[in-house]
Length: 456
Image (cartoon, rainbow, N blue to C red; front, side, top):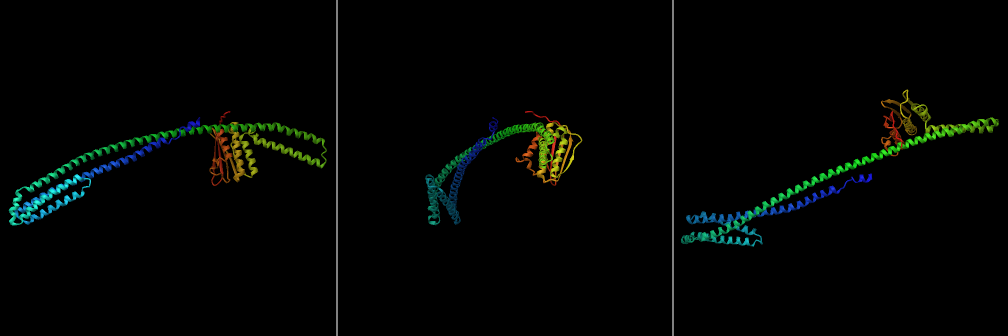
């Protein structure tokens, strides 16, 4: 149940990936749509420019024809040759302009090409009429013929037709320009609407992604909180189980020690008394009997000593009879004497006020630590010190050996160190491992005076 409840708070990727993919798809589609519309609007702009250029060129044709007509009339009235140069220049501008317009017409634009061809035809007739009058005026004999040609108004008629045709074309181009401009403005408004709608949708999707991310962060936080609670529950259960096992272990050791002391101790004492009675009835003068008797006595003494050591290891009698400090003093002295270590002890004059459970836990931790020092530290000196604190005491065990790796106390393989920590945890105390400069290790036990035990 707890596992499924924790797992249900996990991360669901589609909550965030779907809006992100939607944003990406919207951006890509908007890019293609706007690019297509931009091309269309650009085409409108080009068409407007072409129409405006065509109107301007048609206006240049009218202006050129008017300039040529003015030069013609000036020559006829003054008979001055300098009027012929503007006439030729205006005619060149007019024909070069109409040629450019015809060259720019695409094959599909047959109607426009036909109109421009009419414009050229009217230009040919107009300039033919003007050139004929100039040619007639250049000779005295034909001057009257030139004046007569002017009085017929043929040139005026061709000029009016040419101007009328060009004005019609310009009006049509102006209408197309107005239509294209209106269409261009319409497309620009549509593009603005598309841009605004896209920005709004993107903004909404971004807010949605932010909301989903925030929601997922809250889900992750709930998941982490639930996981932390599960870890705390499991850790608490394991701690309680460890404490219970330690209590059971100490209880079993104490029970075994009592049984060994009562049962085995009684048997050994009874054997020793029976052997004393037998010694009075056996002939002890023989050497082989004396040797066998000495071996029996030695084995019996060794058995009694072994029984005492086993009982002390199971449950130190000094701890029950003399108190914590004397038990620590005796055990530390025994270990250091056997290992050849110099021991320095600094204890107060009275035992700290702790329960039997706390005293046993402290003794076992120090016992384990001294065993490690004797086996692995390579030390020469050991210091054991106890100081009273407000509401408890602090016990320090320090050696000058090779020291302990910084992460040794936290590795799963360090079962002894872990057991020491759990023993202190079971009585509400603390255990620290501190590296000593230049070498060595300091173990600090902080123990409260009042210890509450949970009976399971």
